[in-house]
Amino acid sequence: MDFLRPASWEEALAAKAEHPTAVPIAGGTDVMVEINFDHRRPEYLLDLNRVGDLGEWEVGEESVRLGASVPYSRIMEHLRAELPGLALASHTVASPQIRNRGGVGGNLGTASPAGDAHPALLAAGAEVEAESAARGTRLIPIDEFYTGVKRNALQPDELIRAVHVRKADGPQQYSKVGTRNAMVIAVCAFGLALHPETRTVRTGIGSAAPTPVRARTAEDFLNAALEEGGFWDSGKIITPSVAKQFADLCSASCNPIDDVRGTASYRRHAVGVMARRTLTWTWESYRGTRRATEGAA
Image 1 (cartoon, rainbow, N blue to C red):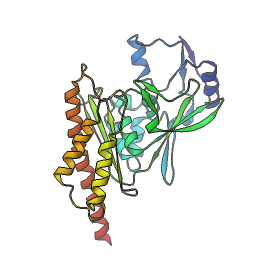
Image 2 (cartoon, helix red, strand yellow):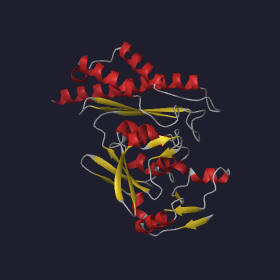
Image 3 (cartoon, rainbow, N blue to C red):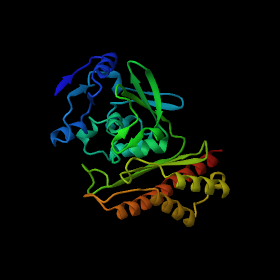
Image 4 (cartoon, rainbow, N blue to C red):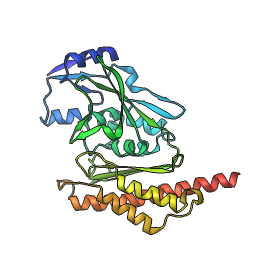
């Protein structure tokens, strides 16, 4: 196994073009586990730790451009207001040591359905910035990024440079079920984001289907219920029947398996519970913001 150590982004792209099978490594929190357990033995490892701009972020007027190697701990510390769902998800990643090393780019590159960042990125509506030496840069919508079990839309000569995530315009939540409170792979996970500017709700489900998925039927139902019931304008409490139907539809959106972490039936049940709870939490936060705004006016 050869070790490639580019000193710049341009050198990294050139190395990837020359060795398309090279596996990128930055934090190494996913890759090294597979290598240590002999589940993977790549011919080349492409070390990106000397590419400094991968660890930087930029907050724009509408979105955050998050470098692929920005550690989860930095997201928690510096981007909680702009990316609340992703910050909450970052809290659940492994241990402090791993949160100081791992980044969103690694989750995306591995594309495991259990990756902690995926539900939050789906709910927020992110775009993945990929680049190759031959074709340049493109933005891949997060809904089109996951193509199968641990497979993504990257071409063999492409690397993930950054993730573009719209700044939150409303409350966001994240919930994860694990067999313990730390250092654990998700049994299942759920992300929810309210987007009051467009009067829409987006979801993200992890570890309950072959890929991270959205509960689109549940979203369509809830978007219609909130609009037709005048909930956005009135800020009234969501009725139990609406919350239950949303939860049931989220459960139905799953396609889980039985494995050592949990059964398929448990995963469906847990996703429904998390959907109802995160909807309650985000809507109460939205109502509180509305009351505060009206009081200030």
